[in-house]
Image (cartoon, rainbow, N blue to C red; front, side, top):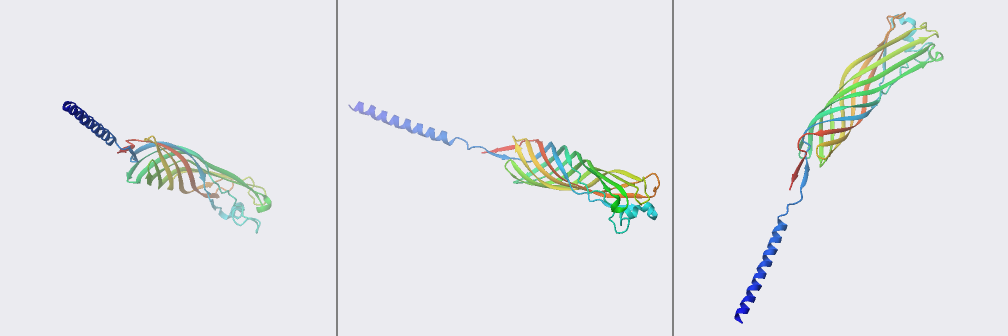
Length: 285
């Protein structure tokens, strides 16, 4: 009887310890599970990519000057006070807005400090910003018929800029600004026909091309995809200053010149895509 009771007690104790052991093992297994990984997006590194966009030209605001010794052919009078007296000036050279598509590439480097990001970027673009127009002055207005034409074009440009941004996860907003440079082209024409100004058949023409330096400023937003790829939308204002084009004639009024100064400025909107080198994401536990 005592022997049976001893066996029963031993069995109960064994089962109890086995249960405690199983519970402890289960608790340890649960506690050993790592916490979910927290992805920290790192914007630090070099990147290279391409872009495409559209440029909305601002007014060229043409400014007239001329050389017309002795008011030969009354051309000076025509371009300023008007002939006959009291009529409108013949200076009707058009105000243009060169516009069009552009595309190119960029490379840069960003460095992240907490949520703040500082960097630098350079880009180079092929552009098709252009506008041209001819204005005809009727004889009843100034005493002569005249065709006055201008064109303005930007064929390529580039920028070298600093960046300052704020990152929140895989998104970043930033401001940017710096140097802009580009190639501008202009042409001018002036032709008058009979009407009392003694400039029958005269035709002036000229063209000019120059590389200009100016400034740029803007802002953008970037989004990191899959770690190494970054897509963005960017706005830039580019101002290349003013340049001049002068018209001459090889006959009759060879000492007369007509010059227009024009401003070249664009508002740009573009899509960018970049590949970022280096490890994009740090996993924290």
